[in-house]
Length: 179
Picture 1 (spheres, helix red, strand yellow):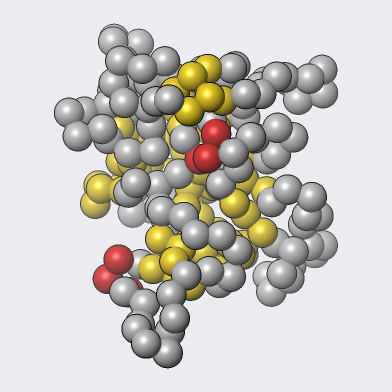
Picture 2: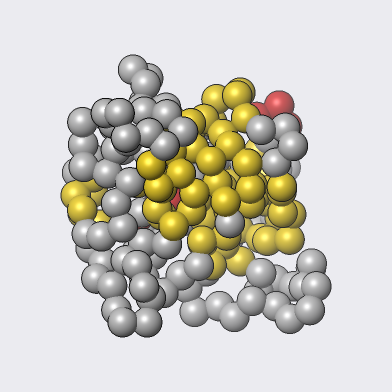
């Protein structure tokens, strides 16, 4: 999955989080499971972790991942800086507020996909970083998003922004992130 070049150049970015798993740019990451965030500024605190959660239960959405996180042997090859790759365990760039064109959305015609004339429509965090239009249990592109809201969370999936377009023929949609 990926991002297209079109994006907000005046967006608000955050570079205070580490990612300890591989992942493609364009999805929404959330707090790591069972990890307490650092106190104060915590810029170099290793507990400032984000990840793509298979189940967003009890997690807080942090931002849209703007780097490809890879796990390569750097004694044999180098990071592709033109693709904005970072090594696993390094800091990542997260977009907290702004818009981008991403394919981390369900394909057109599937539950959770923005369609019709209801644009703009609210966007919610789904499983593994997907951005969906519903805030409850769904089956999206064969992935079963199993999560039940509890009294304390308010919504089943946290709201991350809104869709500014429908999914195009290549599977991309324009999403405004507001976290």
